[in-house]
Image (cartoon, rainbow, N blue to C red):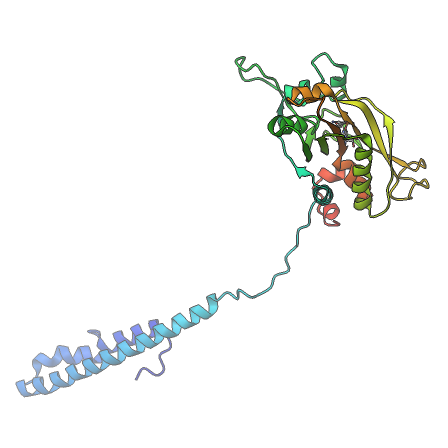
Length: 331
Ligand code: FA5
């Protein structure tokens, strides 16, 4: 009876058609009162057994249709969790690549990786590094000062201009001997061009122990650069002035591209200017409660951003902060 019914709506219509007051069965029930008692009993029993059979068949068909509907919905809404989508894979930023490589090389030489705050006190960024307020060396690092909220604070704060602040923090915390590098972001009020940015990355290095000489500094940097560029690299020191080291040096390395023969990158000189360095000034050691008659050591600071540019042949520093996918996805 229900064979041709395909859905619940049709089934409900079918029920109305057979059992409602207007249906034939409904009419027969209505007219029953005009029948004799025997006819009433006979027809009434026939109607009741029809209703029972109909109701049972109706319930079975309804359950069947509902199961079919549920199965259909489940099939439609199924998600194939194993389906593959063509996802764009991210890459590390070129500065992160170089930073990781530098960290790997220095940790293999027994250096620890240290960190410091980007908002730094004037004392850590300048005074403790032997650069008091009136010192002309402050002018070389045009500084972003943090405006004071209230006059109750006696300290001034800056966006750190160099990672050398971490030297101070760590020597104060741990004393000597100490051996660390501190990669980090620094800030200077620079006119931005192809080789200068106002926000860039540096790596500070510090080694304080007994009997440390400039030869250790030279050997450490040559080892780092030779590994980084995967070729024998030599270093030369020229006199340079930084108030927190004495003697102080500008450090150059033999051009990794031409091996010192002269090329466009090294402007045909065979050498690339790399970083500032020197033996830590006794005043700095004293500021960090280290006795300069017992301990000495070297410090250096180089531009990680510039190193990444050199390693990957990037000719404009602004690309590194540009967030251009077509540039970044090359690394
Ligand atoms: C310093 O900042 C010293 N703290 C380095 C130092 C540490 C000397 C320990 C001695 C002992 P300088 O201002 O030269 O030095 O900066 C170091 C390096 O940061 C530079 O060699 C250069 O590679 C990079 N640098 C400086 N200014 C910028 C800039 N505007 N944009 C990108 N890189 C820069």
